[in-house]
Image (cartoon, rainbow over all chains, first blue to last red; front, top):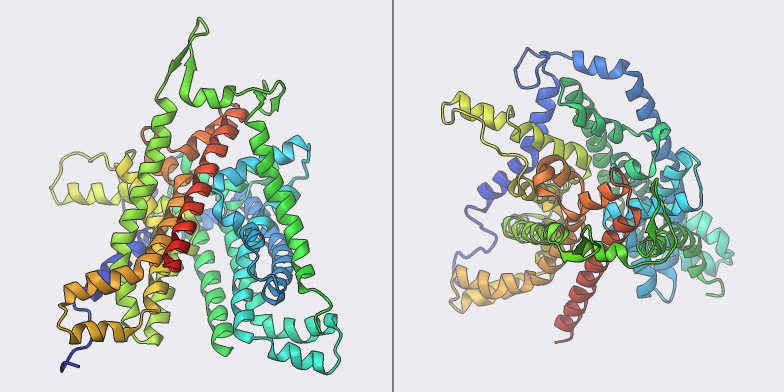
Length: 265
Length: 290
């Protein structure tokens, strides 16, 4: 090998990567900075202030929308995590693991354009005359949360191998006990991480909630979209910043747990 | 002991996905052959009218004439989604390579930094660009403050703004699979090429790029497929002048109350995305086989 060659040295790429990170983060920083603007004009700086956050906090409509969002996200997360965990265990442990049809059905919510999922779900509910308020949205959210709930669990299952389960079976544990006493406890961090990802994805959704929901089921993103449509005000910035911070914090926790889960195995 | 099939565990989720995802997609296809109801919804008789409407308009005397209104919007969607995938590949590749060349600890941190914005609400991410690009936005105000321009440049409501928004939203989708492909690359190949007096450029062109190609294909798919039917970016940044197929579908179900037409468009875009996925999967298989 010729002396002094290190392919890991990448002159210039570091600066370039920094520029791309700037591109990814600068717009978010601008939004957060604007939301602390005390002036009543969006683009004229009127001193730092929390007054628009206060305005958001006392807005009854925003409170109702936030409550809807949390109820839907919590219920959809519970359903998607339960269904997704079992499905992930089943898929990783079954002989027909690579069954193409099955994996593509699980990937379907990620592959079909969001707007198509939204309108076909709307068609489905309306032709069956199902108007169950929040329940409609909970079902719709559960569907697109399932792939996200499954992802960390499948990764963890791959890492674990079937050593522990085989040991339990050798000691005459019945299949149900193997699942509840061995597999699921081992998967706990991954399940938790999948649950957090589902919760974030549900909170983030706009298109499906806007199409499938009705007047009584406005979620926070749907409400914020309405605010943006009516005009850009400092209040919109504050509401958007709240959404941004919630997603970032939850996603960071979820990713951290996921990393823990993978590195342990 | 494998008497209890673990496959049974997947059944509840499969039922939910079939009933609430696959069946609704079927309903969508069925609606695309129906006649629009007066207040939304659809009714019999069966007809091909919704598909006809994509290509031909009906004149007062019931004669059909070819119209490019919708075709041009579909073409714009394909072009913008394709351009977004290409731009993401060009912009994202060096980032993926840079990350691959770092220590494992730094790789984890940098990948985390790349993925974090993806979890931020897409509405919020798109709205950030409205704050930057609009006439009283940060960029226009800044330029005028510096005396570089005297009037706001129309940065929003054009195809460029839509493309920018798509690239911004989907860039992490390209960086991740390219990184995954590069990370598996055997460094001995690079060293061997270098020992054989290959220049940095030819190592890059003849070794790194070909080995990263499957990752780029996967990334293009992950950008192109969701970008094609994307709604928020063209809605907020593109406005009426840069409509994409997602906006058309949304309008058909809201303001114009023509559900069968919206269903026909949905069927077309879904078929297009699926065809694209199948073709690239087959090409990937062929590549692996050779």
